[in-house]
Image (cartoon, rainbow, N blue to C red; front, side, top):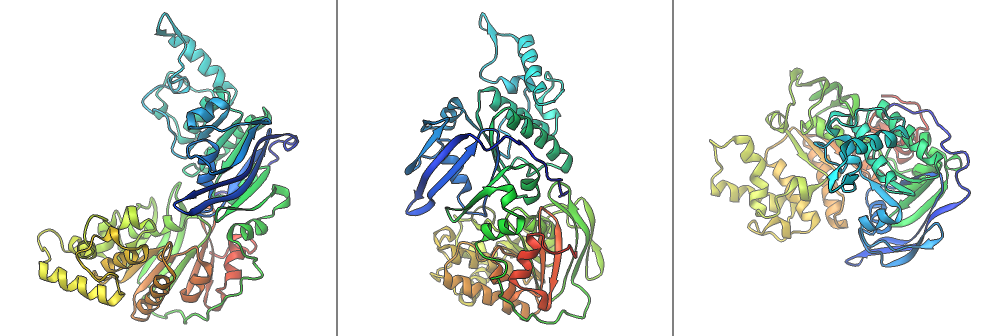
Length: 515
């Protein structure tokens, strides 16, 4: 992602509170998603709301907009206490939200989208000319001159976002919440969106900006609030929270305190199993170079949204690269889809195991043999005896509990579901295994077992590419760590260079890029 120049967004912002949340709390089935969070948005301010996965950002947005009822706390808008009961109620009050996926009708015209549900009419008929005139006037306030009679789908995602924002503002929004609006935009489109945000701030509208791109925070925001584990971790003007302090606040540790170091193995002298050169996909991850050797673990570290998962999916062919080359055993290969990766001996355990990994309705046995059967093809079905033998072998090997191959995998604990997913790929005898957050959301015992399994697979000669947000964990098994920031590979650490402090410094941009 291109680094954007810092810009002062609203010099007068900060004087007058617009939206105030006090002691916001919300629990789901006993789990506290928000715990006494305070949040203040000032008139004419662009306010970054940051935090890692599970920090509570989404819950805070849902509670402040009435999508989810808060358990306790108060909220005021312009000094008046409010309690919206739905997103529509929040919009009526003056709080509008625009999400990453624009919730408009692409087949309708720009004008129709702007005034959907509130078209100007006369004698029951829509006044098309008047609607288009009003649409042009509204968009002129965003310095956007487009054909409002054209279908919305004709325009870029950035323009669609601006149309969605314009619609929200035209409905008398005083508070605008932008949830990951730049996730799929290129640098030019980001600049277009930021220009629109600055114009709104200059008009006194308060903007809550949720993003994972730290460069963008320092380019466009006035204030930063960080959530961690459902609590308020810190809040300060951008000028008072340098990047190093921001990363520390998000991850909950001081850079100087992160001293965990593992003396890794020596890098293998033999040729690489897989080599990627200039591999990337526009809007997803900047072109990168990556080598994977048998018997080594390469870790991918970075904040949520930094490009870790995008790298893993490209390597496995779950996303198709639009630049660069890939070679396996010195021969050029095509990774146009997962089937190509599986044929090459690759395996992949995704981060979202419940939605992208396991098939909850199928048994443990059926889940374990799924990838092996796909690799063999429909003309070489596994017999029931073979399936039973494979399932029993991996249930014993990985200590999957309960040890019932016919139990629906959806009824297992998170840790045992993860083991079943690992078993699925181990059954294919992969040469390269890609693991995306293999220990997330599992209990301590299963966590330790999976770490031990990673070490064991490495010792047996398998190549592993592991995505992990647990820095203390990744330094214990990685031979090389690639650090990512803003969807680009920015640093590489090898051997004795690997430590929590070094990884955090690279994430915080405290060291020069070495990739």
